[in-house]
Amino acid sequence: MHIEIEYSYEEKFIPDYEDIIRNVVETALDYEDCPYEAQVYVLLTDNAEIHQVNLEQRQIDRPTDVLSFPMAEYTHPADFSDLEEREPDAFHPESGELMLGDILISMDKVKEQAREYGHSEKRELAFLVAHSMLHLMGYDHMEEEERIVMEQKQEEILKQCGYLREVNQ
Image 1 (cartoon, rainbow, N blue to C red):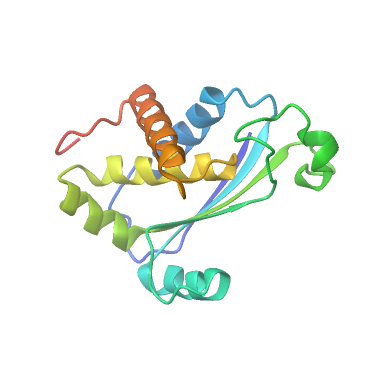
Image 2: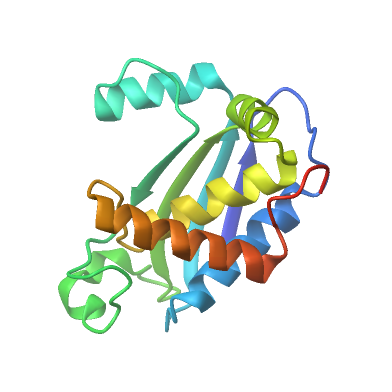
């Protein structure tokens, strides 16, 4: 497992952010029974940078909380059964690890949304990582049924990690 975390935000207000990210990434992969060692890149940034990427990549002219860039497409969410045959470029040529994709998180949004939803910044960061990990494994929430499935999975992953909806966690 290779998780690369880059922190380009001005302050480190969540001291154990790396542990949170690693815990949620590993739990999400286990939850979905990923049979591969995986690589994930996580960038923790600010509203200005995520706004720019959102505009360039999605043509949406505003900051967002999290962006996910999966390396593979899935026939069905988290169906790894034929991934090597269908998506050979999603595997690192030297290590053989599944290059799951990239996650960009606005730490400005982590602060804002933690206040808005009345829970800790740790829980908000964990939530955004879990949400993005599901996107990297092929889940989406464009349709109501997909949204319900994805929300249930996010909550199960967070529960397994111990990040519940409690204030000052």
